Length: 502
Image (cartoon, helix red, strand yellow):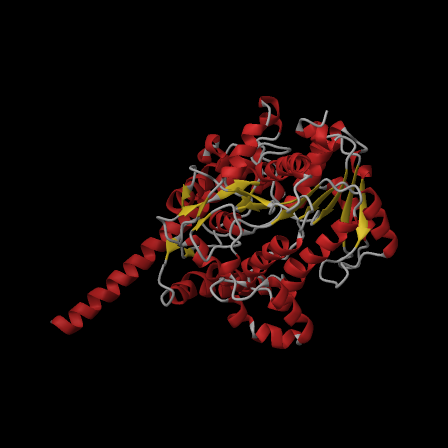
């Protein structure tokens, strides 16, 4: 029956963009494992000499699909790649594939995006905004379309701090149609040069072009059954298909991994700020449930002469916001309980809020030790890497400072009503109740996941004991070094006092 979520997806044909990304893989896995979806077409571009078939073959060995393939060994045969590229003017889709999509697809999930905060404007605009318009144009050709999900971000309108589930066209310096028209008239270099004027109060090209994409949907979706999904910071899975699964170091996870591995020692965050973070599996569940609700709403409003604006589903931590100080303390305490397999120094951190003072402190605690570490690597015949890593870390800290130093509140009325519409059974199958999430338990499991999925080390008793033994040695070396440096500083101070005051 179509009255529940699983019944809705039974025998449906889905078209998904962004399937090779973090959330995209979770969408694919959940659809294949928890529903009887008929087929998933996914837009894939060739990469680093691999064709699209080769890229999907790698999923057979991807840990996210382990549970699925144990119960349904042939499940990935229902995934069919479509060659394309969201940065190309026509999405890079051939006419033959376009006809297939137009005749078969019933559900669209548009999740492809570039998430780099410092992406040049012409690139971010092409992938995040123009591709949204092209996807809507493609959707209009789909004869059997019943629902379309656009994956945005809760921070798409983060020039304000209380964000409701509505559109904010007035925050833009000019509308999406004018910006896209301008991009067709000027060169990439000229467009990039105009970024500050166009971007206005938006902090980076990512959130700016995501806001423009929402404006495209507001103005061009028309009668299409479209909804917008706005998740906040997406972090490792909480419960399924694997506890703590992660395949990247974006956002809070990068900070946690950096501190726990002893690489990141100088941070710059407001410890009093409340952060809104959501697990990847919960996020996918909200997205899939909002598609179901959109299809239901479309049936109820199909006779309306005037199209109703697309509904927006925001997903944040709700009342279960996590204070930055608590998050960092969790990281520090858990790094001893569940140490990572590779640690270059005993984990500790200094928080420097001053933008002027941060580079100086970072020089002594990051750059200087980084040069020493890279010199050791060179002498041992290995490729130096720490200075290059610190450059990326410092750029990320600068680009995310606005988000880590401010508290954002996201209204979730539509999302909460969505959960109320679900049966008790499906609230468990497609769980996303953030109020019940235990953060201490969550981060402990997330750190275990990082050991397995990023550190490539199993959470066996032997590996944990070895890591703890290594950590104890580093702890002894760390405090010994602190004692020596303290003695030297005290001695120098004593000499100075003796010279000037005797």
